[in-house]
Image 1 (cartoon, rainbow, N blue to C red):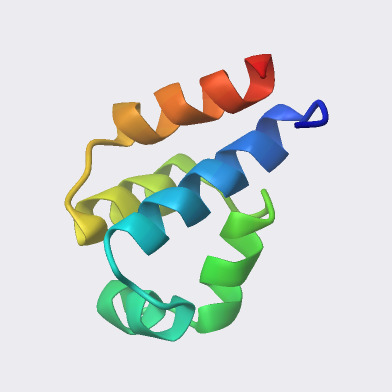
Image 2 (cartoon, rainbow, N blue to C red; image 1 turned 120 degrees about the vertical axis):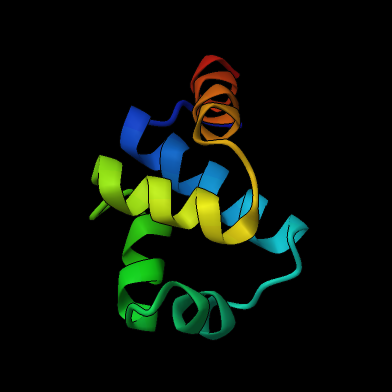
Length: 77
């Protein structure tokens, strides 16, 4: 895996957790009450505010720290 910036790694971690939880982008966006553009941007490492990451994590029922730990592992890979 090529080196990723922290933002890119966070986006990849979010995508991995979303797919593992069985959500499509549109489904997750609806569950979060945001547009699918917001979810898509988060998964590209944009719009990853603490509030958005918390909402994402709460919606898919995973701890924010688990998302962050995976992003850190992606950065180190």
